[in-house]
Image (tube, rainbow, N blue to C red; front, top):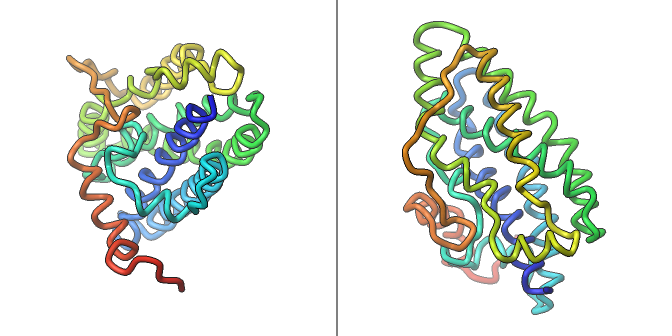
Length: 250
């Protein structure tokens, strides 16, 4: 059970870490200064969540590894993040779509994780929920603003949604580790989140006058270490300094 908890904690940390990196790529490239800063702040919130979770994962493992080891010295097949968060930024519409689908999930997820019998996960969830509440408000407002805006913004928002939708169902796919921990009252039972997620997403898309995407064939694999090629490029960039100059301290 301890191994399951270790991997589960890594899974949550990897989601936050990889999405943080993607949002960080917008720094200095945002469509307007205010949103450039907003996305950077979202990224910082997520890296804070990832740090707390990596620290706890290192504690659970008990092998004297640190949060930095967890982030910078693991290979792609050892990452358990969902495929959604590693997808490329594309244009602003695609980034908003990716963020929105994840934010609805994260808000519902951390709301439930607060009830975990694991006190550390519960505490991290409570703090993370405050940040995620803002993230969801930000991404929801932009989905509506772009979707119900100009013809160009609507087209880009719809295309972004269509592109990332195929990765959304994995958010609710439960691995063996999740099922085992949920039975113990530690992990979140994702089956109870899916209808709530569907309802919230549908409400926002209706307000934004966007069409609910219909995609043939959802994509899975991230939670078990099978990723798209995009993760390799992220890790090559993110881990370069640590791997090229191991053990260096600032």
